[in-house]
Structure formats: C-alpha cells, structure tokens
Length: 579
Image (cartoon, rainbow, N blue to C red; front, side, top):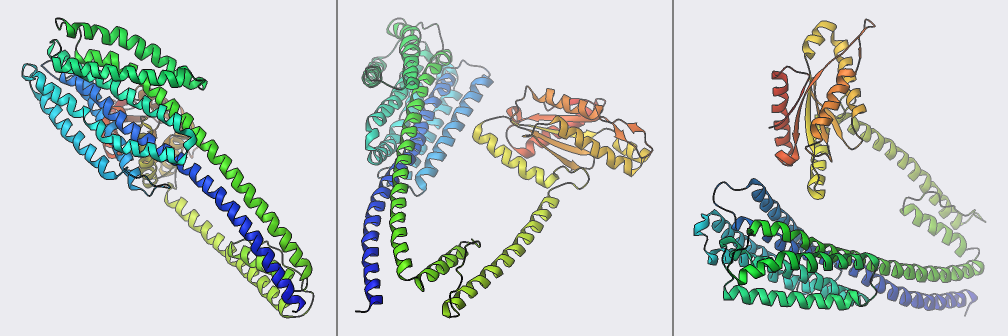
C-alpha cells in the first residue's frame, strides 16, 4: 500500500470517527434546543388560547349590563362598551385561529382550527340570542330569556377548553420542568372564568329585581365551591412556596382585591338580597361596573405567571443554544486539528487545494476577501488558483455595478415619494405611511389624529407677489410644520396649498391643542420675498380624531376636510374639529 493511500485511509478513518462523535453530540444538543424553542413557542400559543377564553368571559360583563338596562334610549357608553368587548373577542379568535392554522414547531394534537370555528359559531349564536333579548322592553325580558342569553355566552368557554388543554399538553411535553408552573397558570385562568361566571349567575335576578330561583342557587353554590377550590390550589402553590416577588405581589392583590373586597363587599350583599326579598339596591350594570374591575387582578396574576414561564422557557432555550454552540465549537476544533495534520502531510496538494476550496465557498456566499495561496509551481494548481482569482475580480466588478444600480433605483424611489418643492412626502407617500400607522394603531390600540391645513388666500398672495414668492411661501409652511411636529408624526403636501398631518399616538383631547400649535407656527413664520422684504401667512386647520371617527383613513380625511371648510367659512386662520 502506497503512502498516499495509507494517509488517505488514516485521514478517512479519523474523519469518520470525528464526524460520528460530533454529529451524535450535536444532534443531542440540537434536539434539546429545539425542545426548548418549541416550549417557548407553545407558551406564546397558549397565551392566545387563554386570551380568547378571557375575552369571551369579559364580553359577558357589558352584555349583562345591557340585559339589565331599563327601557328608553340605550346608554351610548353601554352600547360602546359591548361593541368594544365584542371587537376584542373577535380579534382574539382571529389570532387564535391564525395561530392554529400555521405550521407549528411542535405537534399540537387536539388543538384543531375546527374547534375554534365551532366555538366562534356558538359565540355568534349566543350574541344573537342576547341581542334579541336586549331589544325587548324590560317588562318582556323574562328571567328565562335573560338566563338563556347569559348562559349562551357561558357555554362558549368550555368549547375552547379542549384547545387550551391541547396547548397546555404541548407546553408540558416540550418543557417538563415547567409542569407545576403551567398547572398554576391553568388554575389561574380557570379562576378568572369561574369568577366571571359567578357574576353572570346574578344577571337574571338583578335584571328583574327578584330573589334567586332554586336553579340559580344551585348554580351559584357550585360556582362558589369551585372558586374556593381553585383558591385553595393557588394558595398551596403560591402562598406556601417561595414565589418570585412579582407573582407573590400579584397574588396578594388577588387575595385583597377579589377574595377580599369583591367577595365581601360586592358579592355578599347581592347573595343576601337574592336569598331574601330580592331588593338588591343595584342594577346589573352597576354590579358589573364594580365587580369586573376586581377580575382584572386575577388576569394580572395570570399574565405575570405567563410572563415568568416565558422568561424561564427563553432561559432554557438560551442554555440549550449555548450547549449546542459549545459542542459545535468543540467539533470544529477537532476538525481543525485534523485539517492541520492533513495540511502538513499533504503540503504540496491538499493545503493549496483546501485554501482554494474555501475561497470558492466564500465566493458562493458573496465573500470576496478570502485569501488565495501563492502557487509553488507552474502546474495545474496554479491554473486553478488563477481562475479563482479572476472569478473574484469579475464578481467584485459585477457587485460594484449592482450597487450603483441599486443606488439609482433607491434614488428614483425616493424622488417618486417626495414633493419636489417642499421636500415633504407627497400624497402617495403619505397614504402608504398613514395606512401602516393606522394598522399599528389598531394592533397597539392607540389613537391618531388627521389634520388638513390650507394656506389662507394663497392664490391672492401668489397673484400679488408672484410664483417665486408663492413657492417660497409653501416651503416656509413646510419648514414650520417640520419644526412643530414630533419625529413620529407624519406631514405631507396634499396638493396645491393644502397640507395633511397625521399625529399618532395622539388622543382626541390633545388634537385641538396640537392643531393650534401648528397654526401658530405657520402664522409666526416669515416668508422672504424676492424684493428682500418678508410677509406672513395664515392657515385654516380641520381636525378629525380616530377616537370619534374610527380608524379608517378615508373617513378621517373626509371629516377633517369638512372641518377645514367650516374653518374657512368662519373666517379662516382658525382650527375646527370634526363634529
């Protein structure tokens, strides 16, 4: 056997042993990392399931208030509260459905999109029953109809239970070490549901101002018993074990707020009146207004637990990733030692070949700075090295041309979105940016304000002073807008002497103040005329806030435009809010 063949055989054997050890260790660490990442993802999925169930429970509060409302015109605040609650529930279902429809990093047996669809169908039917009962005169809202409306919503949450159970099992399978904390999280979510259910049991009696029926008494006692059992389980988990300070503080707030204030001072009087003459001294809406805020403390405890679980899962993932990197790094060192040995033994062939191969690999990844070896002889290897060097040079030239092309494209795109006169974004750029900001406002639930500004008597100014002065006037207005706006606000030239501004986040109360600041900034600006003198301009401003007119851009612009015309009709140089 030749030395060359022997060295190849030894090299192959060493490579095989090193590869086997490295792959085995890396595979084990990779599985640990994947399990930790899957657990972290499963916790995020579980949060969507818990939030969906919570939103259904929270929707019962404003529904119960409407069921107990007196005859006459509906309270706009109560109507809006119910609409907002339903919108939140719909959004939670959409997110949960989208999550279940996406490919998961780990199997979720039992968590099928069809179960969420069935729960939403049940929710839709329950809402229809409630709406029909709400539409009846109060005298026609029989206790049976009210109870059917209430328990129609109550029945939706159990339909989500299989989905959440499957998500819990996914977390437990991915992160067995978090099993106890996951169970505590599940108990807390169940406590929120039963606490809300207890309030729903009172709705029919409060709506009709009648004592509890035997069936209501049984349902109330069963729910209270379950609440006490859940309280005991949480006490065993939280009060008798050393919990993190934030969770311990949240649990103390639940004990003092819900089990203390809510149970003794809100629920107890209703229980006493329901067991007695039915004179509650409060309505369903008033009861919900006092009772529901205490339930948020249970939700806060659940969110703290979930945040803690997610932090623990993230830490486990980081530890697994560190181990994986360490194993891969150690494997790389072994390979480097082996490569060094082979380089020494095959200096004339393997070393330049390996360097040239790495240069080709880097070239495939667009890394053009890999060094090439110097040929030791005028042979085939020298020709290969020369060809790779030429390929690097050609690739550098091509990339330089591509960068120039990309720069020109970016420059043209910027010019297409910028008003050439004022330097502000143009109408097209504003609509694109505004729609993104509105989508962000919907997701993060903050308000926005749209303003339309029109320079007063601009045509007369332009005719009197000339087009050059008119152009300078528009540039002056643009500078005044830039100086008066925040970095997160949007301003654009809307057309002619009209400008549009989007403030966000911004609530309706601050809108007229901000608009007045912009008007004053424009009034204070000085327009330099070609003659060397200066002039001032004023502007009329129309304002529309999303809190009053919704998060639809075209509607906000329409309302702001109407307000702008009122400002002009009422004398110009003023701010008008959309009605």
